[in-house]
Length: 477
Ligand code: PA5
Image (cartoon, rainbow, N blue to C red; front, side, top):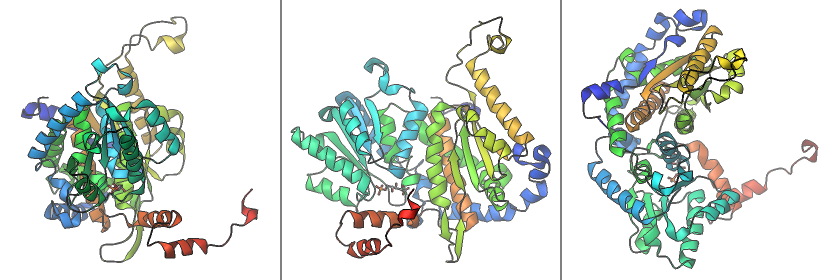
């Protein structure tokens, strides 16, 4: 990839087009210049907060430095990936949440959409699976299609205490042991350097190959560390290009003025829209490759911004519900609602200027005008026209929408998108004056699960659950 030349980098720049958020296009439903300008000082303060706290592990802001501080780790990962590709037929990531959505997203974005169905000669690496659930049927079905002794299992967990991931690990451990395989030969951990159960397990087994999930990097901000880089490298994805793209976007966003900083402007647009009751943020890529980027983004935005307390301890209930939608597929499902339903959404389009191929549409059915007009165009033209038409229809209906333009999809542009969304989330959290990097709201459910399964130390929680009133039969119909 030519990311070393400035011209190439600039030709690959991801840009933000927010015309369809303004009164020029939306009339009285859009933002005036004056309204947007009223956010300038708030935006400036958010920029300053993020800049001043960059790299601080104690604030979970270590992710800002990932594009710059991993030279040796990247070299090690590339080496490991090479031997994994040589030795194994299958690569399975065991993880959940931030430990899984990144690998799924990069796999889908940059690999063949039917990668696992390709013959071995056409794949760059082993067959690839990410198990991010504890549905027993899914585990059974995975075991039907892999051969454990020919599989490299990448167990990804910062804490090593996540029930879902550790359940999967126990199943795999049992299978490998029964097959007479030394766990060390088929397992790689990605985990906290010092704390956590995977560290203990590794020590007990005499040292399982382990990559570090750095202290100051939370799960949902971890795609650009070994969590995402190892699976990506095994798939033959250009991880150096991914990090170069992130660094490039970081440099673009190193500007305090929101009108020159796409991540800051994007955060301002969302916050301003939220303040006007747009509590739903639709992420709508017009690309099957980016379908799971929308999933990854949904976790980042929801878990980071959905909070009930400000940094100074005041109660609040903030956040915007992210919704994933796929163009053009969801034009035939969701777009009716987006166009005519409540004025409670902002749609972000992820639009490709150039697809991986054009796919010409042959001429045919010449006596049927409804069909014949398609002949001679390409599928690329069709999907781009439908994207433009949906943006037009939403705008005409007074619906806020904006577009991130992607010159083409590659590791460099994907790296830009990831960093842009991470910065946007950090800026938005700073504007909301909340802790963007914790997730206390998921703890209660975890504790209740522990109690239900009899984990030591959760007897009081079990009692609390047992003391709930009995279900009223009247309410079960
Ligand atoms: O974003 C997060 O922090 C979470 O989604 C975690 O990644 C997820 O809960 C898994 O945690 P762990 O890596 O400790 O297994």
